[in-house]
Length: 584
Image (cartoon, rainbow, N blue to C red; front, side):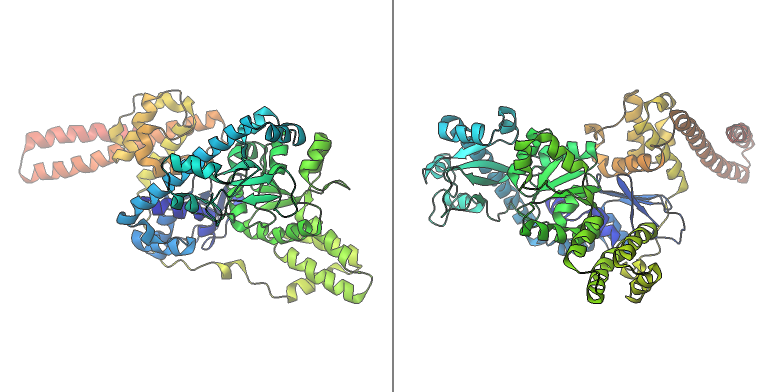
């Protein structure tokens, strides 16, 4: 069922699953909230979208979405898997051992076809001067950007690609399943500039084709239909090329068309992506939210673009994204046109993006005559519906003051209207945690985990690990991490190494713990903390030895073995001295 687990993980954002039980607030790249397992007042529960991991500091428990659902619902793994599969819309029968291998092989086969097709289109572009002129001169794309987005050309011959792939051993059924043929069995894409659609890892999941010679009877753009690999409601174009820039800039720019993305990347605004047209979905925004909590939206300035922008605002709020709206200069239709005219104007438009709430209030005020009672009622009703969704009372107060000025209405009147429209409390939306009897880990593990977390992110503490006995740690998992750190002195963990991949989830929890607790500490404070934890672990180990020796002494005294009892007493006395010394 590993494939089923990965498919479910890819479809469900961990912060959304946990957010049904815990009210989460963003804390840097992570989220935090009150532990669902005890009545605490200070948030100690953390969720990492990047690592798809949660950790509860109050119980020293953590894991992935499956372990969380098992914990809060009191389910076993199979029940949790079925619960999350229903939520994600995953058919588990497709992943039964007999069919799972078939599905994986089919996906691999379709990916291979798409890769071959991409190379075929790239070669076709090089061989066709007319297509090259269009790409280089008319679209003004550089050689570097053509290579980065793997742009190609689909020949006008309606059987060219089909014949090529069939000669390679693929069947007509394969080509239908991957979405490359039309209803007559010929090539779907003909006479078009071809842009591969890539998943977040860079694998080609489909294609979009832009017609080169305008033909009123043919669509300007043609996309791969829904397939096993491509789902337009989830696919974010350019994400594989943009994700590092999104992380670096801490915001993503969403545009309407694929050419807007390509032009923007050529202008070195590489944090730009696109959805399939204007149909933004939660899935699109959740994929971006894993990289940054901020999105700037730049849809076309036509009626459809404005309507789509308005629809995107509540979706972004429900997902928990900070959304800003980019307005194109007068007379400019889209980012591609603006980039061609002046790259600096595109950058300026991005930098001058206004918050979604400000943009929406401006739209509402332009539609209603706020000098009339009816206009004021319509405007305030629409505006307060947006204000109600804001979580921060200071932010609410800010916008209420703006609405009051615009409508010449008192702040108290607006607050009364806001209050009278019944607002369901946050807690009422949260699902009940069924399994409240959640086992808290042995506190010894907390000290051990904290030490290992520091060691993974701070190489200055590694001298403390060089002579550290791995047997002080209670299980194989922790012992292997100690050994890894001791064998890699001076190195911090960036990606999970081969030696520790068996303990992937535990390592991710340690990294989340380190990020949440120790990332902002000074190097000196981290070192002192690590030294304190080492002493505590050694002392705890000696206390356990004391318990064992006390039991052995009692047994020796019961059988009147004075020699053994004398030796044990000596060992106990020495151990007690060491424990007292360690507690100073």
